[in-house]
Image (cartoon, rainbow, N blue to C red):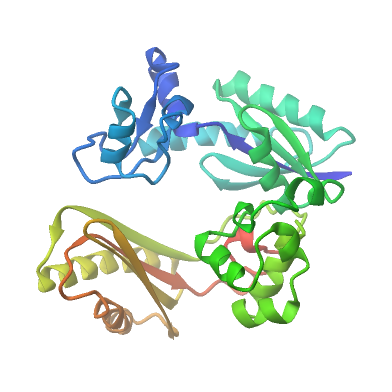
Length: 354
């Protein structure tokens, strides 16, 4: 039988740092920003020991330092994590008959034909550990969605199988926010429709979902409630949907002209990235975090264009939405690009093509 395995490295960034500094083993370790909690930055990852204090990814570094005052706080070292990730992915690709779809530094889908997926998963875990000294958890599923969700039940260093046979038993009574692809905003919109649990989502009226989310995503969310979707692991090179840049400012931006210049500087960097891809822009996004920590996002679809000046003009309409009397601590700009003609073939939401 063809199985989907989801391999997720345990506390990956923190684990890489501990490998480089063995004396940190067993200590609360936090990685984020430049490693200085007096600066504005967020936690990239925390070791399990730090998580026991309530530290989590995305948390402001200064708050993390208060929660775990004895933690070792380290700066982000992206090249080191990229190198470690490449080594892990090489191990996955070396598995007999494996098709590997990389999702990020620390996770990938692996498609395999095997009669004993648990045994395959255990061998894979051991191979990764032997080659890289990193531990991983493996979710086993008959779809990408089920394999991805299964991993959470296997952490840390475990293996868990989630299929059509046990989906309702394991997931039915759980809140929809526990589904991969359902965040806070979507879960609130589902709650407004009277949908609270995974089982309720699986049987929700099609019309209600498509009215709220559109014909494509409405049907996708119902299928997600059933754990369905594609079972095909796609190893074709990933095609980015867009490019984005953001900056957290160590001192709040209060002057309107300064805020606009900062946003346009980020946009220029984004458009340089877009130019390297050679695809036209079809949408724009602006992220604003006001002091002390309120975040707003604005998006805009635009007519497909490769004209830089036209994109900048359209972005000006988003920038104009920034509140004129509120200090800004973070700005982010994003440009969505048209996908290549064949990019949707065989793609699922997990491939960023929806």
